[in-house]
Length: 166
Image (cartoon, rainbow, N blue to C red; front, side, top):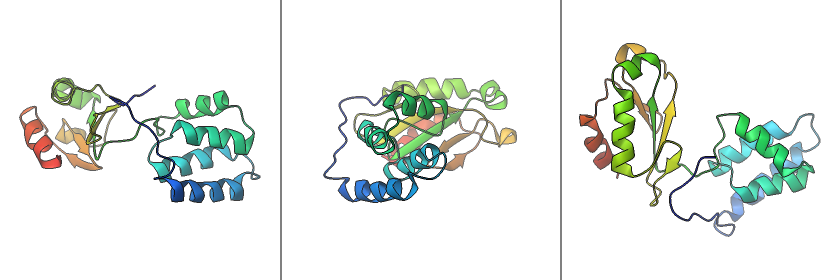
């Protein structure tokens, strides 16, 4: 399972309105056929990840074992169990990007941020992910930051990007 560096606690009081919104969504959709996927997707959209407390809420409201919900959520790569950083970095490891040095970019980011792919920095500023093909192979290597592609990215670009997004 993906992790966050340090101790992160889901703050129910801070997320009170989001929890109420999500609770209404569950109530409106719990009786439709196959409610779990749309409910997980809504949770991911509202909270930007799937907190354990929300997974337990889904389990209780839908009367589905927590293990079954985790089984579904871990099967699909769209779901994450950690909050994303304010700067969400995805490094393409598709063939073209890999051949042009994306593994070296990942290694450098790991060192500079002190996290591994799938983790978020302690301060919540950066998260790092590996991805397969961002659809821009002719401009390899490609790094996507907060859904914006940076093409022909090199290790030399890392410090500039880290300063820009701090």
